[in-house]
Amino acid sequence: MPSEQKLGSAIVDTVFANMVSSQNESSLLSSEGDSQRTQYPYVTGTSVIGIKYKDGILMAADMGGSYGSTIRYKSVERLKQVGKHSLIGASGEISDFQEILRYLDELILHDSMWDDGNSLGPKEVHNYLTRVLYNRRNKFDPLWNSLVLGGVKNGQKYLGSVSMIGVHFEDDHVATGFGNHLARPILREEWREDLTFEEGVKLLEKCMRNLLYRDRSAVNKLQIAKITEEGLTISQPYSLKTFWNFAAFKNPTVGAEGSW
Amino acid sequence: MSSIGTGYDLSVTTFSPDGRVFQIEYAAKAVDNSGTVVGIKCKDGIVIGVEKLIASKMMLPGSNRRIHSVHRHSGMGVAGLAADGRQIVARAKSEAHNYESTYGEPIPIKELAERVASYVHLCTLYWWLRPFGSGVILGGYDRDGPQLYMVEPSGVSYRYFGAAIGKGRQSAKTEIEKLKLSEMTCRQGVIEVAKIIYGVHDEAKDKTFELEMSWVCDESNRQHQKVPEALLEEAKAAAKSALEEMDAD
Image 1 (tube, rainbow over the protein chains, first blue to last red):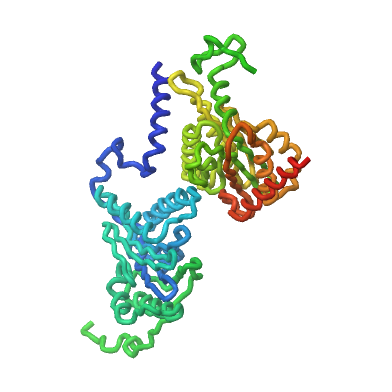
Image 2 (tube, rainbow over the protein chains, first blue to last red):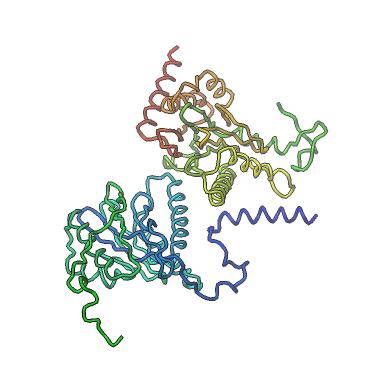
């Protein structure tokens, strides 16, 4: 009775499948050929900046999704809520970010189904993401993202970042990509422990404006998210004012006479 | 009631001459001997309550949960063998997760009930598997509103306004039939379920019990969760005083 046996082993398999995590392919059963090299990112988001402030965490990211050097999508939400206590901002491959959001959704769901009065805080989520990213990197099949994870739980503020190879930091201010080079120096000079909400937003806007001038993949449409003990808000998209009234810009062709 | 199926009751793949599968009936007896589980459908949601018989005074209150969340919008109360029940819950969670993964929306309760019932039934078809020794009352809230289903060890599943399994199911069902469920909110339903469970608990035969209750309703934002502490205490107090009134007669 071969069909009966197949069904019987199907039952056993489903029993074991319940215990094994729902991470897909790249298991003992699939062919190793496809994951022997890293990928290339296709649609990417640029820098995310996060800072601690008096009441919690502030995070900023623009809404651009670049397709190589083309700015293809201009309404990509790169800041998302994770459970009750955390906020995630992602740069890098957008489709991998969507996959990460699915993993986090499952994580938060199973945590909430215990219904035991506890919930995962930002430190735990950050650690989980680090494990996921590092293990994928070890299989030469990375999730091509740099993530910023911030939140407040039981009065404790937490802000950290993880890169696609699993390098993780925890700090008072973090950034991904170009933000590390253009925003962090500003933050090192001007960040203080007791920033108010308004001061924090001004500081973030100063960094984002700098990125807008100098990062070719930046777009002038951003969101700022705030997370405190009370809860999370993500602002409506808005634009920064820019200043182009420099003398050298006014008459761009001056001094351009040449032999042709 | 007692029909010994001598010879025809050794395997779940054997029918008796009068068309019964005794192993499934014996599995149902495991459910009948366990603490009562009650579920009702009110106009704005579902309430599930369990009479959790306490085997030992050493047990921590609030442990050994008999009601489990299956997804955000649904939960099930388990009667019978606890370990078998845990497998059913695990399977239901897995089905709910797969459905949402594939179709992008939370699993409709009807679909979930069908899948659970079909899994329970599967385990009655092969001689190398034994039937589940537990039945579940599954309640959930999807876009068709609140729904209540019951799945028995035979794999049979029906949709109900009110359902009860376990020791006190006969008297519980009688009590449920007296209620006007279509006009009741879940807040009121919680009190009624507590009264029913306290009412059917047999002080003489069983020792103490702990009341465990959960709901999915508009008030809980259509999420399945434990009934809030304050309301639970209110329900217990109302149930106890209703008992005293009855005893006073």
